[in-house]
View: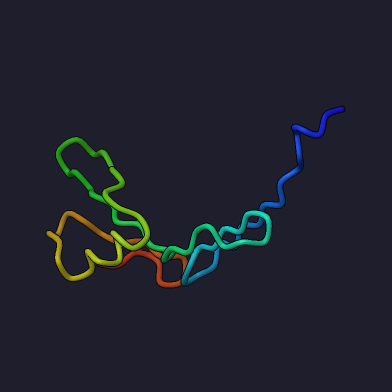
Length: 78
């Protein structure tokens, strides 16, 4: 009767290098576990600038106000 609500098999691996998401045993997301954050000293606000591959591509190409965060290395300059 309620076969429309077919259960889904969802697995999430928040690893130190990559975050992986599987849906029904198929890989649907494989992104680096890194976040680029902008620290605005004037307003004391922190904003997420990029995550995953976009944040990894920013490494070495940003201003001093942007830092990267990774679970295995902590905070470091992008």
